[in-house]
Image (cartoon, rainbow, N blue to C red; front, side):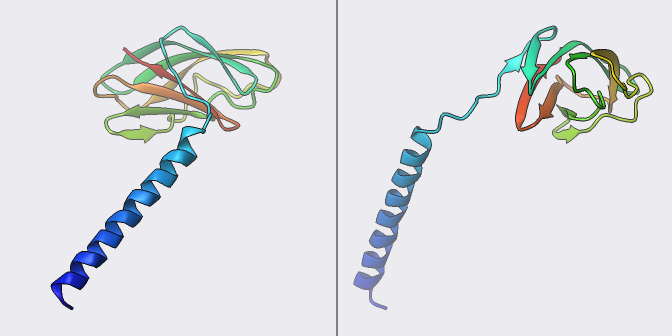
Length: 137
């Protein structure tokens, strides 16, 4: 190929990239998706019909303990839906005897156990395509 053809081909590719970027910006500019806030400890948040709060986060030498409170009419398992972002990875709660499955309770308060967090952990509760996040101390 000659130099002129290569220059023309690169210009066409550049123009196509700019057009594709413009189209993507126009698509996302009208996106009114729900933003996920980062809440302080103790904040009560509505997530898919449940009122959820993280009241305390304690990091020990063996694990991270998270005190939560959930209230609502549809709490099957207090552990499901929770995760923690720490140490550069997202982890699920460990099997916790401090957070038993509730049969018909309207309000559950318990302690979730996670792996040891290095740095500041972020707790995440997700249910029915809704999420809430709390920043630990």
